[in-house]
Length: 632
Image 1 (tube, rainbow, N blue to C red):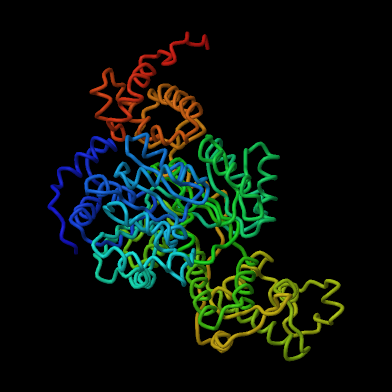
Image 2 (image 1 turned 90 degrees about the vertical axis):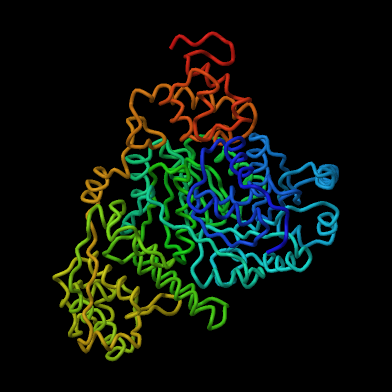
């Protein structure tokens, strides 16, 4: 810890109240802020929406000098700076999108001490020119955002982050705070080591996001399933749909648009201008759906994303948690929905086996996939399993807001069916010297005399027809769960099934395999509709908290319409002005004075000055623009 003049914590509380409009710190925020203000280094793990940014923004405001924020999110820096400026914070950024004159102006502001916060990209910070610039000014702290990007075993590795260890060497007296929304114990250790934060104090908040309803469904016509989800549960809501490939992104964006749901694509195959335009529209417009590869989403501050849907299996629990965490940043009810099937397992196993990484890389990737498969196949609470992955305990054994709690799945003894399936794979190899994919093995077990079965005389095998007691979909579930458990493997271009070292323990009856039975969709929907976590107002867009009174809804809608017009005029995202959560509180309170409006959480002094009179006019039923109200 560096020596620094003692700064009273009252200054931090004043900044929290006056600038950000919050009455008090949440969770560990105060402890973190006090530690960094006093000059201490910190490694902060806090879920998306947990308030990580305040942990470095407030110390930067009360410590002498400029807080330098290292962020990989060049495309979002402008929005981040706009949001801070709306609060009255002196903020700017340096990145490759700026021309020479723009950069010179920002550099002059920094050297003159006219900035509270300066955002830079990690690749920019690695250049001698930027380093020399920082030497010319006073730095209050370094904040390393998205710190998991330094982990080579993680889900979002960025090579430029490896060079950030030089911060400690070049500016040893400047406190550093590294922040991320997700990291296992192993990843945390790697972050601390690579960023030279081994002596930093660690702060780990609960990763639980109780407002998010986690649901994993069997994949069966995923386009139709997705459309059904959006139409019945999220009409008019903003959300993100993740796909594995660029082609899949384009296909599903077109499909949703053709079915009346406004959707935009986002992937690396699009031009930078198109990606930037689509991202800007998603942030600034209400009710848009972004269909994207995982290249999209990190650092997205949009608070009213009501759902995140995955149409392909994520590669790791860390990636899944990071991506689903983009829903419900405002704390309101949101959905994390994943469609998962046999082909997902086959595809991910093949990608690992055919990867160019060394043996250690493939083993690590397989370990991450195994944990993700365990989350998909569990019959226990999803949230409990998810938190356990991050070495945290769930508040209770049943969260009441995931599919396995709302409609508990049945487990059944699948040992005998597993033996039949493994025997079929074994006999194809031993008696015919052949290997086939799952479909052919299932046809043999069901006793189907298809052209391929007849061609290879598979109806002569002793296992032909011995599985007629299960349906095709049930057999596919057996194959999927055997692959997930490592009792079967796939190999080759055609994804043929092969036995593993673990297969013999099943064939000899040494293990009992309890399997998950699929939940009928109508049964799950009946469970979710009665959940407090998924309660919605009668209005389609934007989920409302259960205690939001219906009589406040018209005023809330008027406030949203006013906010949308201001945001459009200023070319900024609506949430930069006020979050939905703040507008709901205003609608309930119906303030009649600026002093009363200033008591609402999220209404700081700067916003009160800029927007207060307009808000009060809307509350009174007047048009803040001064025009005559419409006769609707």
